[in-house]
Image (cartoon, rainbow, N blue to C red; front, side, top):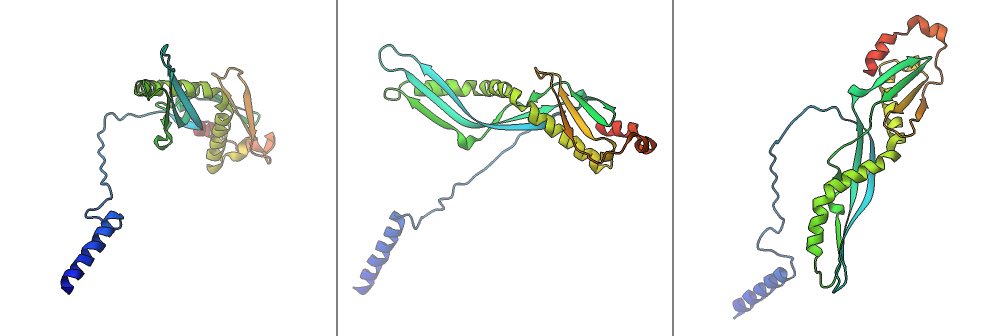
Length: 225
């Protein structure tokens, strides 16, 4: 009699643990797999010098004369990267100033976004037409993000110019040529205002006389290439 009571108690405890989720007959951790297949591999000249993160919202509407209109929205966090091509850089060195002329600032495509940040919202009667609008938004999203990134480019020229100047100054300084110039000027040909941005780095820039004795202009030009 005691053994039957003990067995019932054990069964009851196990059942309670299973129901409450504290005990599982199998491992509840999902198994993950990944598989990569190279499609194409190429060399590239894409030197990223500016990045921008934004909250983007895309909306589509389907008008309805009988019931209320359907409005679908997808929001996400987008990551825009802007780059230059080193092969397109031109320069000159004049009176202790390095002038850098950039032919063009490019948007890196496709535009990246945080998948975890994607939110879908639909306002309609009984969910009618929501799926159709979500499909349309997703089909156009890649192109829409590119268009958004290009429209944001105008606000990134300043960041891009400073980044390029800082990086070049770091490169020159690391190689022992920081004392041969006092500032770097960056100009982008594609910027509408055609402004020149000057960044000063070396307050102890030497005068022309002592510098002319040991400066190797050709070596500096080699570093800029």
